[in-house]
Amino acid sequence: MRVGFRPAPGPCLRASHPPAYEALRGRDYDTAIAGFVKGIKAAPRRASIHKDLAYTYLKIGENAVWPATSLRRAMEIDPNDSQVAMDVRLSVL
Image 1 (cartoon, rainbow, N blue to C red):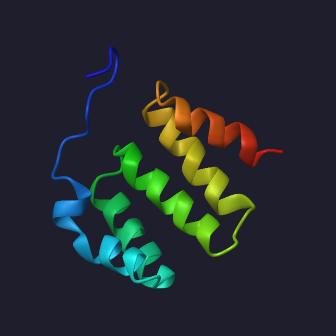
Image 2 (tube, one colour; image 1 turned 180 degrees about the vertical axis):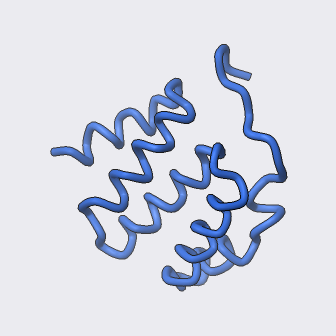
């Protein structure tokens, strides 16, 4: 476990919201986005859900506000995630 990082309480999204990941694997991005939004409502402090939502938005070609907002939120939750930090910097270019 990284220093300074506390995992959010609650179940893992993959266990509690498998339809989001199943939809993502099936390239049903609208359903995946809806599932990730539902997951965020259930566990708003889980950075991984925000990241997965952002990457799903990018897969559908959304490259403006929504992915950047989700990535920034993930970085606020887990500032030690270097991949998110890099993606946030790239999203503002």
